[in-house]
Length: 210
Image (cartoon, rainbow, N blue to C red; front, top):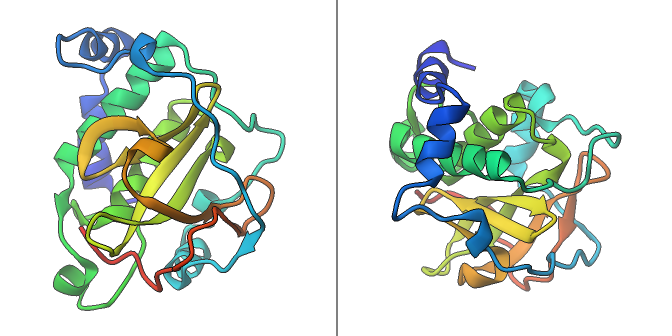
C-alpha cells in the first residue's frame, strides 16, 4: 500500500468521537433509518474478473479468506459510524479516473496508491481500511454490477445483520443492495478465494468506469 494516500486517509480517521460525530449530523444516514432487508441470493459459481485475479497475485493478503471470521457484520452505532466515515472519506480522497486514462490499460485493480483510481480501487481501499478497523473481511465482498449506464461497475457489499449494504464511489449514501438500481452479477465468495453468481444475466469483462 502506498504510504501517501493511506497516511492521508488514516489521518482523517482520527478517533471514535469524530466518527460518531459524523453520523450525528443533520444530513447523515443513521443506523436506525436502515430497514431490515434480506441478503442477496447466491446462485452458484461464477468466473472472476481477470483483473481481480492479477490483483490477488500482487496483493494476496487483500484476497485471503478466513472462514473463522464472522460471515456477517453486526451493525452497532460505532460500527455504522466507522463505515459511514470510511465510505465518505475515501470517496473524497481518491480522484476518479478510468484505468485507460490513468494507466493506459483496460482494467487494473489496486489500492489507489497514487490517489487516483476507478470504481474498484475505491472499494478495495475502503475494505482495506475497514478491515484495519476490525470489521471482518469475509463479510465485505467485492461485487460486480451493471450500472445505470449499462456498464460494468464495482461496488463493495457489506453482508450485515441488516441485510446486504452497498458502498459505492458514485454516492456517499449506503443503500440496501436492491435499492441501488444496479443489476447484480457476481461477487467474491465467502467460502473460498473465488466468485459466486448473483443471478445477473450479462457479465461484464471489465469494471472499467469511474
